[in-house]
Amino acid sequence: MAVQTVESANASTPAAGSVDLGPAAALSCRECGHRVPLGPVFACEECFGPLEIAYDFAGLDAGELRRRIESGPASIWRYAPLLPVPADVADKPNLNPGWTPLVRADRLAAELGVTGGLFVKDDSGNPTHSFKDRVVAQALEAARAFGFTTLSCSSTGNLAGAVGAAAARAGLRSCVFIPHDLEQGKVVMAAVYGGDLVGIEGTYDDVNRFCSELIGDPAGEDWGFVNVNLRPYYAEGSKTLAYEICEQLGWRVPDQIVVPIASGSQLTKIDKGLRELISLGLVEDRPYKIFGAQAEGCSPVAAAFKAGHDVVRPQKPDTIAKSLAIGNPADGPYVLDIARRTGGAVEDVTDEQIVDAIRLLARTEGVFAETAGGVTVGVTRKLVESGALDPALTTVVLNTGDGLKTLDAVAGTGLTATIRPSLESFRAAGLG
Ligand SMILES: *Cc1c(COP(=O)(O)O)cnc(C)c1O
Ligand SMILES: [Zn+2]
Picture (cartoon, helix red, strand yellow):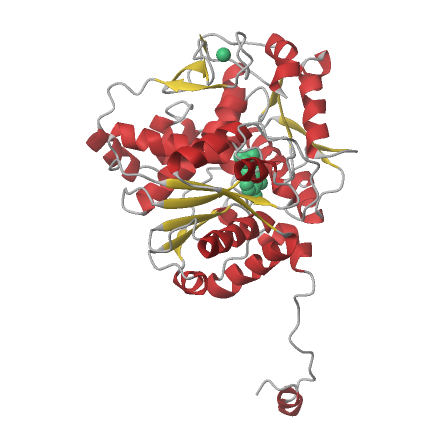
């Protein structure tokens, strides 16, 4: 995606230059290290590699930083000193996502045979009920800093709702693009905030290509596409999952983390967040393994991992896990690196296993996950069975979205019985 659009996308740069995004110092190319000033660009002008935020963390003392974090707000903004946002970010109108529960999942652990401590990081309680509020909150600050007046994105569903809500709160216009055939819960959730919601006849990858074209066109001028021209800022929001998990474990890195993969950005930045905490001295430097989870109907990264490839061959998605249905994941190769470097793996599960896992998580822990959560729980089960995941180690599984958005996945779940309002009828139904 980056390759064919780098020039047009980098061309529509409004007010770059000196902006206050806290500790963010510059953009730096992940491939060649080339640095450019902070601006709404996402691809390296030298090698087309992805740009990411380079920070100036000089002068941060671990003890002082930890105290500051612990006395900060109950949202991602407790970590503002580590994010590309101005210091007063919490005072601006935004959705204040994050600081979601880390659920100790003993009953699920017993079902899966995990003995070393199992936790579910439950992000379904974010303001628009998925982890996407974390990333959009960063992109919103970048959009404000660069003077964009419209917030936009290409989305598999959850992002559209997160962008619509954030724009509404901030008083910006929004216009977002989704595949036309998404779940009703996601469509309604994206539309209700009053921005423009456009269905595109095609897959997510078609939607994404269209957005890249729009960025280069006068029609897309002054538009901040959170996951395209603001992608370097957006992506940093996923670091907050790593920060929260470690803080909630008492400033300790878990041994194993199971993360869903759509574009692979979340997994890549969770790794970045863990490495930052280690290098800043906030947690002890101990090894951790990161596992990636996909649906079999869209498993380009899992397929590459299993085949021992470094490159990811695009697929045409066909799965109920629509929020993860990206057939050509931008960060796929980096996910492969991280899974291999940390001793993790990338695994996939069938739609049927996804549904079973949604039900299992709900029945054991009272957490109703969307299909993406079914993917991580299903993959965790498979990894324990195969021995790839060590059941004696501390394991964190991410649930990144709310089951109310993907009700169709558990269609057929309903009333145990319908009875007359009498004890006789109650007993006759076998309930008493
Ligand atoms: C977007 C999304 C992800 C992960 O997305 P990446 O593109 O890999 O960062 C995971 N779960 C849900 C529910 C999502 O909406
Ligand atoms: Zn480069």
